[in-house]
Image (cartoon, rainbow, N blue to C red; front, side, top):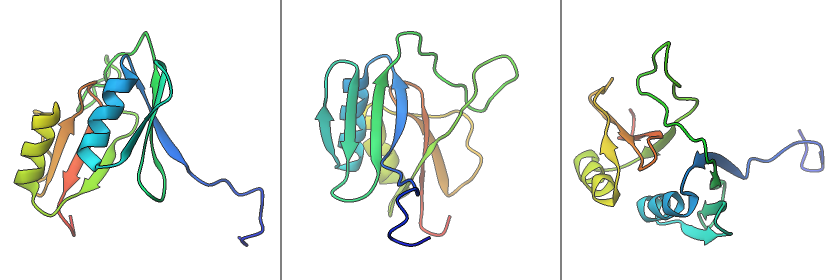
Length: 128
């Protein structure tokens, strides 16, 4: 690929469905320190100074995924990974913002949490 290849896409965001996109954007903005852009009641964005961010889109029929997945319930389609330096402190901070620790934890140096809408995300230590 060359810099002049206009046909190559560039990732700008991952979009999460939400029954309350503004509230979810505020959660991720507080979690990451990224800037929240409230574009209206059905769309919000969270962006770092550089690089891709997250977007939240209103979905009135939203159903939270299950973690771990099961054959009879909507499973996780994707999850977000965030590296942290202090796992216990990061988990406590995320919980204070409205996340909850998932019941199932597959690794000792990773914590699976659920955001306020139930999307799974992971906090992990360097090298994990």
